[in-house]
Image (cartoon, rainbow, N blue to C red; front, side):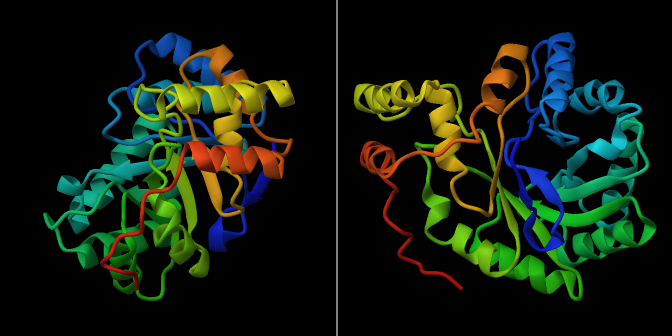
Length: 277
């Protein structure tokens, strides 16, 4: 499994990690997570929102915590100063660990002042309960506000939706994050149940590219999305066979021809006319 520096932190993190949103079969998911760890997919992402996921992860990482890059998230409605501290504590209890590698605010909200949330995040870093602070689903303006609210602290990552049918982050969010040392973590890299997007043309292109490399369309998609050196992906880990397939998505390169064909089949949307910071 290829690793690369995780934003400004410099921590070497696997390009392909494991997500835990909407796990349906907890026993199968635990097996899949364990297989992923064996294959080097040691970045495990979860959240208090993901009912039962943290409890599934706990026994899998027991005795192996030092191998794992562990991430969880606080819900915006819980993100007051005291609420953030309490939510992190509960996640740590469910995960049966004393620290996270990154703790994220799950999405932007005006429910609690961002300064209050970030002050709590800094306190969690001071206490050693998380090594780094991150955000999820933030656009450029929100990222700028989060950076200012953190003061002397830094944002380690921004976790965002990223798949072949939704490449909007490539216009503004990805360049902004690269400039500021913020890793970009793409979730739902196969979309939300409809893979591939782009109809018959998209499916045909992925199949043709996959055939040329002896890979699968899913592996081609992950390889394409992770081509940028600041991007990490967290496909859901729920089935051992799928996890093995995900692990084989990197360690080889798409050709210029491949890239051109994929770009034509899955074009980026036009940039947001509002502009960037």
